[in-house]
Amino acid sequence: MNDIIDFLTQRRSASAKTMIEPGPSDDQLEQILAAGIRVPDHGRLGPWQFIVIKGDARARFGDVLANAYQKAHDDAFDELLEVERERFQRAPVVIAVTSRITKGHKIPEWEQELSSGAACMNMLNAAHAMGYGAQWLTEWPAYNGDVAAALGLGENERIAGFIYIGSPVEPPTERIRAALGDIVREWKG
Ligand SMILES: Cc1cc2nc3c(=O)[nH]c(=O)nc-3n(C[C@H](O)[C@H](O)[C@H](O)COP(=O)(O)O)c2cc1C
Image (cartoon, rainbow, N blue to C red):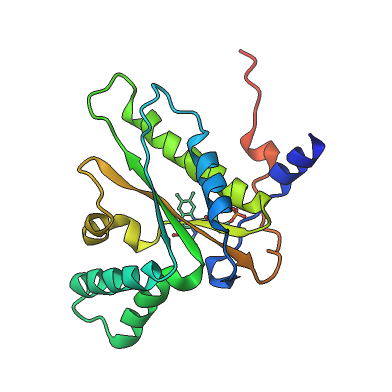
């Protein structure tokens, strides 16, 4: 048990920029996805979808990104479009995690959205537990309508994050954390 507590209290994301092959195998990816659905989900609405983008599809998705970027920026020049073509090739596997809201349900939308965050976090932890580096990024593609359309998102669905997974080139350095004393207090009435 202490190993798990150490894991949770010392975890760090890797930078997508520093990920290389190999990524998770198909079996490992299935386990990561299985961890993603093992999250609190009030009302059992399944308010998320996981869309895997790997292999050659990453380059094809890069074309989607470049086109969407160009449409949104008249002044986009070739180098910028090239960055977009490469964006999803920073890691061997990318999982787009959506937040899929059931409108008018007694479970508040806020709670449905929070469940997507939990799914992202569980998949990050699962990938890290296997020794991979992983990072939760949104960046502009999470907020672009053409990207959402290419991913086949529904009307009340949006991107909660793209989980990039790959082999880390180097262990991540420590990051300054909030001090518990600054954010924790005990309410005593
Ligand atoms: C919803 C969400 C979106 C994020 N999007 C980005 C992003 O677009 N770009 C970025 O550099 N970090 C983003 N981050 C931060 C990274 O996931 C991560 O927190 C950071 O790399 C530090 O890693 P660590 O604190 O997990 O070790 C996002 C985090 C969350 C929760």
